[in-house]
Image (cartoon, rainbow, N blue to C red; front, side, top):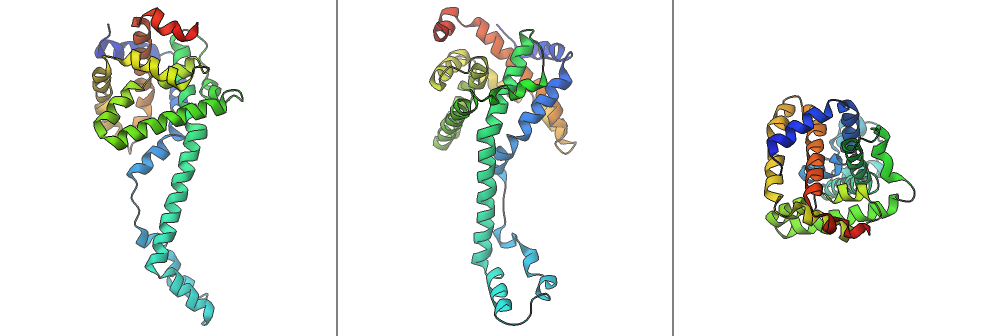
Length: 257
């Protein structure tokens, strides 16, 4: 059995020997994943997307005539401004999705592999965060993680509460794929579901227990939260290993026969 307090205390002691390596790994993974997720909260005022295009400094460079007329009517048209604003928003969002799918998700798997290796006493190397980007793993892993994102998106689209439940049910899929990239997504989901069975509410409480740290980190323009990442993510790797050890060997190893 595990307790939240005991798990967090174990993680603090465990991280002391390689905290800064873990910090760099978490930072790399965060840079390529937080952008896309953050777009959900972004707001755009399409009426003010390119206000500088109608300022006097631009007008004086245009001589009277057809070109001046086209410029004024094109960039002062509210519909045009909205189209340009929406197009900019769409392209930024699309670029973020692509970066997350082909790079960010693979860095998440590499981050989990880094922590799992550290837990099991293997050599701790920052380059492990890039391990899922090997030629033989890149596309299959990107495909599995992208499908996982779609599954979670559809659950959240259905209702918030089922989405939260499923997010914890699928929580350990990246950890499982980090251990064995050859597993199919359905096998990884099945294992994650068994590992989290009866623990999802406790996992939610464990996540919420870090809110105080993030509020404290937010006082420093959000930068402080970056330093908490190794602690929080390391704690969940510890939990993964605890639950993996508690699960029946026969059930877990059916996929490794």
